[in-house]
Length: 88
Image (cartoon, rainbow, N blue to C red; front, side):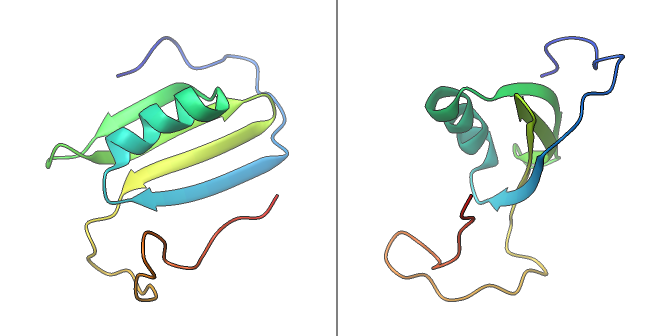
């Protein structure tokens, strides 16, 4: 999905955050609904996931991609969370 042309005039970015999700397509939809992000670019991977997605809201950009567990060092799950987060 690519809703339109990439903005021709660069806009400054105050926040640039990269997030990996097991279900990245659902995460993209949730970020749009919950926080009003707009997907400006989405490149699917070969496994019904997301190779790279860029979402923007004002001067914040979030990059989302699918985490298939290969090559990522992460802590054990604690209930529904890994214990990591971004505090803004």
